[in-house]
Image (cartoon, rainbow over all chains, first blue to last red; front, side):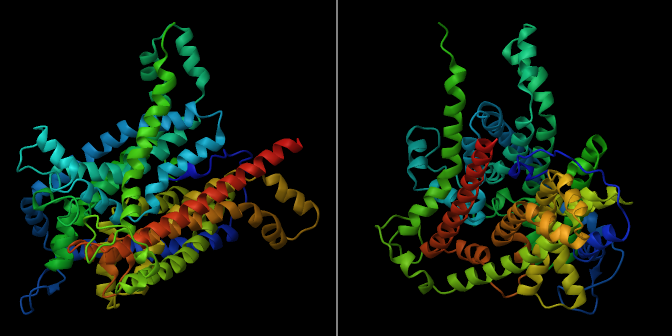
Length: 304
Length: 266
């Protein structure tokens, strides 16, 4: 799903999967066993840690196995604003990424069809940000919008910002950075789905006297829905867990902390492992609900 | 005559969108030539020094070397495991197909901070010391799924007639695989390996949870961000960017040339 855009070749002779048995198991077993050990067990470890209680005889940062479900109530009441903020920022950035990406994906996937080389070059430009370090490109935006930058001084002179107002550290800046960093995850699935769009349906629509905007709403959008759904999922999930953009050293400030920042500081700085784990479990649970909704609608074959 | 806005609106929009996507890249590149001191915040003049003496800045090259090492090992492991799974998914019918698809998708859907904290908890409870080894073990997890996705697309586009032809000519299954299937899959496997390396090289969050005292390039940048990132980091970032873009462009132009050649023959 995610990077299907890398290979524009469509399945031709899909061989019937008929053989079975030992070969399939031999091919699957090593990889799936690896995911069992290094993906599933860590998630279980996380659930166990989230229920741990402080060691009565130990130091700060020492915990013992327990069933302290109260941890969950504590983190929700302590960090409710950060949880809501993560959800709000992720929603805003995902919608922005969709609005920015759709015309671009439409241009590459539909309008530029007669020029395959141009299509490929434009796809390369879409994924170009992936090739420069995530942290460096985020810092670049921080410098561009820094307090002494010409953008900020111009905005202040125009009266759009007060003379003591800045951009870095505001929710606007964090949402801007999140949108920028995850746009390729939206554009690629949209492109994959628009590239397969049969333009004769659009012609049929206008032949039947539908206005261009009606054709867009009634034909183009429904036909590109798989791309919209997978793009939304692929952008929303990493944004909801991101903590780089919102961190104080990058685009955010203490008032923009998201759930990822709280997990990081609890785990790596204050060593409150149960709180960090409980928050991770809650985040994962919320995302599993989203994925379950998707699987119910589209099945599991389209996931990959 | 009606002025057709649509004709120019889309290309114009695309150009603006690409400018927006490229701005931070251009900024990073330009500031790699800045004659800066410890931090790299204001323009102080043009110099090639940071490119020619990049390793003079303490820790930059060591972090870069670690990142390359981690990327190479994770990529080899993830590409081997993922290619096998991709072949099995397309070519074989087996029970638990739904659960297999789900198990492969979930690492892509798991926020990095969750997987990072989970792995760290597991290593902690097993008493494993964190370092380059634990970073690699973590990177293989998320690279694996992306390899499966990329190679699977290639396997599905493979015409099984070619393999049957090999069988008809008395090739044994091993020969069919190594002489026919594998060479045809190679572009897909190469793309998957590249993607995997890029993901591993640029990963920060999972690395940061499982790194212990070992540095990687993204960790170096993160640590330096509090004080100001030196221009040498921009040099490394820009060099990696240029190498990656060149690689992708060469592959694409090559592919296009082959396609045109084939079209001419027919």
